[in-house]
Length: 172
Image 1 (spheres, one colour):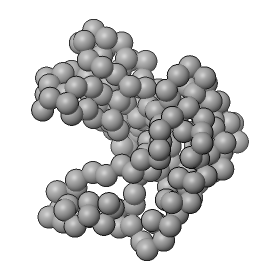
Image 2 (cartoon, rainbow, N blue to C red):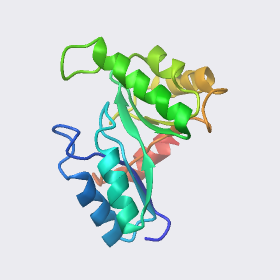
Image 3 (cartoon, one colour):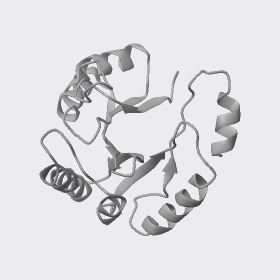
């Protein structure tokens, strides 16, 4: 499995989505021989410190990340590339939490794009992408083109439902 890195793992800090402690995720990644790991908890960076410490102890490459779920239902994997981008991401999360009821985070697409400088972003497609998804993705890519650390990415995963190749072809 050399060269494969899990870049969207959720820890137990993502309530009802992740179950394992960050250190357990790191231990599993190391046992599987993964090249690296990124913990991307939902609208939170809560698992990254424990994950980073565990990864250092295991000698595993670790990438700080976050899974943003916006008010319009879209989901994005985000990875800051430097200290300034990390600061913008934490400020974005703080604003989203301050303007929402306790335990929630309200972020819009404009909020994300305003904080995008220096981030690597990957849009997470819906389970069944509708016809307008590609158009929206192109518009999003154009909106953040000059601010991202690299071109907008599209995260694709295999669901093992028997139609993975068809879905990957559609997303491509």
